[in-house]
Length: 411
Image 1 (cartoon, rainbow, N blue to C red):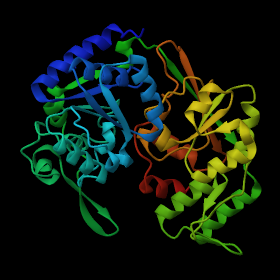
Image 2: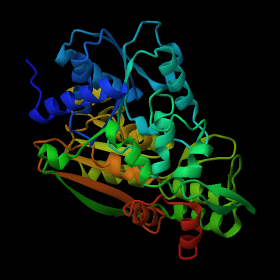
Image 3: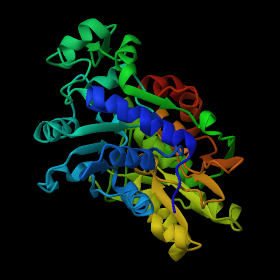
Image 4: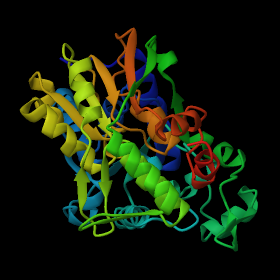
C-alpha cells in the first residue's frame, strides 16, 4: 500500500487550508519531490468526486500510474493542454493544472491560458491546484496569466495585463527592427509577494535530496562538408543546391541555420529537411556503447539521424524505455518537464536549446531521492555554435539574436 512521505502529508494539510480560504493553491514544488501524488492527495483530502488533471502529453502515462498507485475515491480525467477542447462534460470539483508556468505568456494571454480561464469559469465551484517546479522561470510577469482566470486571484481587480503592469512591472522600451516596443519582462518581486499566501514552495533539499549533477562537454569533429556549408552560409548568407536553398538573410535565420548545420541537419526554405552528417549520432553510439542513455535533441531531423544510426535500439516512448534496454530520444521542449528518466545511466544532449528554462529543467530528469549523482553529457561540434549557447544558459540567460551577432564575429 502506498504511503506518503511526512512532508507530503504536511503539504496536503496546508494546501487544503489554503484551498478552503482562497479556492486555489499553487504547489511550487521542485522536480522529483512528488508534486503529482501530492496534488492527488489534496483532491482526496478535499473529498473530490471528479478531478480534471491537465498536463503535457508525454506526462500522461506517469500520472495514470500515480493515480492507480494511490487508488483514491475520486474519478479522474487526465488530458493534455492541446486537447482541452475535448474535455468531457462532467461536474468537475477540482482542476489540477500541471506545469502551470506554460500558461504565463505575456503581455497577451496565450490560447492555452484563455482555454484554462474558460474552463475555470465553466466549473466555477471547483478548486484549482496549479503546479510547477519553476513558476516564473524567466520573469515574474509570467504569473499574471497563470492565475487570471481564477475568480479569487490576487490580481482580480485588473482587467488585463496592461493595467496590471502599470503597478507591478518596471516597463522599459527596446528597439526591434527599428521600432520601439514596451518590454514587460521586468516584473517586480511584489508579484510573488501577492501570490505568496496561496503558494507552497518546497525544494529538493528540504525533501532530503543530495543528488549532484555532473556535466561534461564532449566535442565531435564533423565532416569537412559540414564546415564548408556553414562557412559558405556565413560568407554569402545563402547556399544554393540543385533542388534546395539554405537562407540566412537575417540574423535570426542565420542563427537557426548554423545551429542546425553544425549538428548535421538542415531545414530548407521549402520546408523539407535533410540529414547530411551522422558524426554526432555515431559518436554517441560508440561512446555510450555500454550504457542505457536518454538523449535530448532540438530539431526533428536530429531524431531521424539517430534512428539511422541506432535503429531499433532507440525509441521515443517512455513506456518502451522503462520496460526494455532501448535508449530513448526526446525533443528538449517536450521532454524537459513532467517525466522521469531515472532508468537512464546518463543524459546525453545531441544539441542544446536556446532557452535557459530548457537547460535547468531537462538536466534534472534523472534526479531521485535515492540517487547520489547524475551524469549529463553535452555533445558539441568542434567550432560550432553550441558552446556559446551553453555559456548563456548556464547563467540563466536565454541565447538571443543579440548574443549571436556578437559571437558571429569570432565564429
